[in-house]
Amino acid sequence: MVAIDLGSNTIRFVEYDCNKKQIVNSYEEIVRTADNLIKTKKISLEAIERIINAIKNAKEILNFDEVKAISTEALRQAENKEEVINKIKEATNIEFEVIDASLEAYYTSLAASKCINKEFKKMFLVDIGGGSTELIVYNNRNKEILSESFKIGIVTISQKYKSIEALEYGIRKDTKEFKDFIDLIKITYKPDIFVASSGTPTTIAALKIGLNYSTYDPQKVNNTELTIDDLDYWMDRLLKMDMKEREKLVGIGRGDLIVSGIMIFKEIFRLSGFDKCIVCDMGVREGVAFDYCNS
Image (cartoon, rainbow, N blue to C red; front, side, top):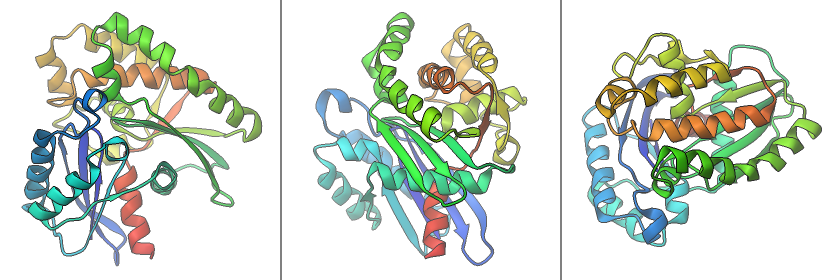
């Protein structure tokens, strides 16, 4: 089967063999679903076209016999979500389900719990998306999940603040709302492991172990540990590069977004009180696949 996760910046596909319980192949493409969403409250026709083209490209690579397709924050916010879903279905015969933040947290937790290779009781899990950031506590014993979704993502924040100075100030201001939730989970739930699964942490983990966008290997990235010093080091290096150099490392269309991603990640890291974070390449799309096969 193929699981599809349409995010605010990227559409991700994974082909998964339910019988063998293994990933067969994967594909992703930057489609910038949330471009100008803050301003217009709608997904643009150009973004819809990019999404349709990405699905057609994926069909050349993956086996689409069975499909489960979901979308997250961008379509949750969009006033024209029905139009978007209908246009995509007309062009590709694939119908997307817009899931709520709690189901998104479930899929993310399911994937991360299978990805981490060390014992843990309670996981503090972070997923920094294009249109929102999910903060999650996952109890490995009883599988309970507590989550909060914040409307702060790398695409939306980059479009809101145009300069580095404005970005730094804006992220510090906008992420203050993280503090109450993180304080609550530190006091009440006492997580013993900090995990991050999304494009920013996986990109920095890849750079740390000597990979870049073209040599990226999820198996090598999984379970890589990051510190705040790693984030500072790569932020400094990336800011000194021009856009062309930066995109060689992080991928075309990601050069401007990686900076806001690191800033958001760093703020969460600081508030968490952890001195290290374990990176997991698996996210919502893998969680969708695992859940589909389990049912």
